Image (cartoon, rainbow, N blue to C red; front, side, top):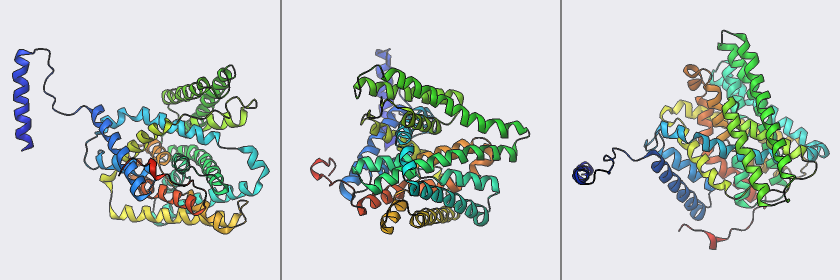
Length: 425
């Protein structure tokens, strides 16, 4: 029936073309930008509905919409259209990573050594447990087992930050969740650079790749981050504090950092995280310390998580890889919770330390982007070898935000929900 309707519409359109010569040919398919815009609308509505009716984080709805309408399921959004949206997704992730980097308070760590030791314990135990599982149980070779551990050892900074903002959470558990997320992200980026060299050493015929590529990643990201942070502080110091102009400079230099990192083929997430950390540690005059990103970055978050949901390779899913991914997530969860419960973290109550461990479980956009960065080095091998962390990220895309919100609610640090502002019945 649909075919008949389209045939009639095509015939009528062609008849009009004979008289109205300026009309374009009858479209054989919907424009990719229009389709993607429809996907964003659907993602927004699903997220708002889940939030209003079930109390779930909005992020879950964004990911579900992307997964459903992306290339792996219904295919409404093609791989080519998805590739065209990657710069916007990079910008969204970059701004969120910038904010996480700015939350990395090294001075606070200096005064709370217990928090630092807890972070070291959580990072070390998480990497070790995941590596041993991927190597000893799943059977990956050491190089790809290390890659899987590098990708999945850290929490998802973007998810944790957005859930905290959505819940308007404040308190000791909230601050420690953000700090542990920032520290584990920093550690995973270091491991990521090392693993890049390990993978090259395993497959490349030229040993220079194993040495130079990790240096290019780290030094390139650091130089771009330092230059952009310096530019932001230089210009912002000549503007009124907390003014709209300062916000504009912060966003503009962040986007400039995203574009420069893309041109130099260094990871955007690492560059913007370092830029945020440099701004946090090097802003002695407090020029931008009290300048917040506009709430509009939530709009970019919708794009980011819809793109991530659409990028997940659901067409390659098997029950075996699904069970292995669940096993990896269980090992990872036990490692994080056990490390924080044992190490102390400066919190006296074990229950609150456990809640911090539960709250840092999300695994999302950063992990997916890291996995594709490593897999892209040797696509014929890397895609299948990194399907384990990709499907682990896929599962935690849906469950991680719920766990994070659960921890914040049980800690009693979320603001009361104003149901009068819920917009989806």
